[in-house]
Length: 375
Image (spheres, rainbow, N blue to C red):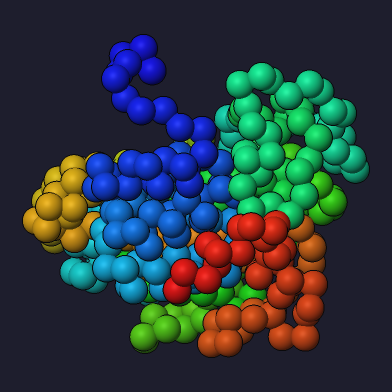
């Protein structure tokens, strides 16, 4: 505010759009997960281009509506998973098209020692209420949530993602940086089964301190069935097992191990970090056959160019929404535990009312229904 002292400042996005709508071409949305949806829907309905941070929204239903709104209102959209505009994007795309990455049956994705994560907080209750800061409209901060929770520093400003009520956990947060290229170029779509195989039991309010998810993706377009595991927790013991005889000796803090055909293992970190082929002997054998891959305009420039009609965004809501729906299914498994069967065609959990209720999310509070009725 000090640097741009002439800029108009609003606390309520609805007032901002009402008064400044004619002066706005595009918006960026960096609020917590639970409040993304309403802001983006209003912006798109007004013809504004939208750059929105990950994960796009908190529920499967909201994501379906965001994808529909992108098509209906014909606006440029981009999710803020910057690696989808970096080197790994072009590498994965090129190597998949060339058949280097093929016949993938297993991916181990992981995040160890996660930042901004709770440290064994009491999981069976909400935090104690504290005074609301004078600068904060706490009810507005809840957006369309049906109930206003007592204020606590354990909700805001930094740790809201730890709680079921406000966030999508580590899978929703970091999965967008780790499995995005695999989801896109291996055409994963939606899983047919998702399971919590965690050292910790689900709790009512807060995500596990550590967890392991397993997602089973069926055969699609001639690609074999694929098992994706997601591991997160405070320490390398919560990461995946390193493949034997691969030559991989250390574990990134965040990344993935991809098991492909011809006994090739691809290992890489998060965001745009490029994949490396293991074992070293096989890497040397095929080095001459690896196709070169170019660069991109960069994630943020890609959005700006798309707004000017010069490019198409690489992580538009059609791509990012489908990816984020995978995260919401994992979150439901983290909340309910056990193994859940999901039907990718009907996009429902057969005979599981509790899981389907989480797919849809709660009904919005009075006065916020309009954002669900814009498409």
